Length: 146
Image 1 (cartoon, rainbow, N blue to C red):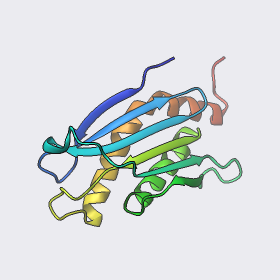
Image 2: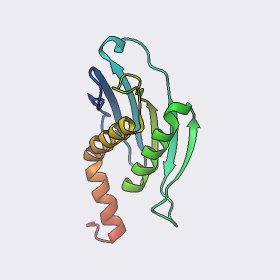
Image 3: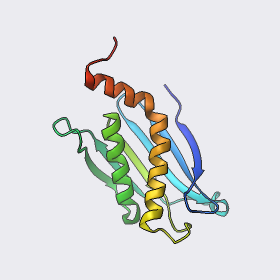
Image 4: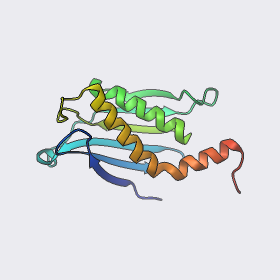
């Protein structure tokens, strides 16, 4: 069993806040947990945020299904979009927990700041999931080597 991938990277447009990522890849599911903390908040507990389950739709692969399991309004849309994107790209059920706060960004969490953070999270996560994505693509193309 593979250990979880744990890493952090700077929150875009923020001076001292980092996004912390914990990615666990199982044989039949992906679990991703995200949070953020500044240098002075690092020791303080972080609220849970939203938790969303998404799975690929066999009949409409471009539109994964999702359901929120725990909702916290400021994080729900970000979490749902991320869960659906990962389910679509990997063709695996995906659980995403997210409590990223944009309060420490330059303008306090504008749409542009949130999109920059979303792009960065997607970029980092997909880089770590590349072998799974290639495997899912090979299976869907029928080119899987046995």
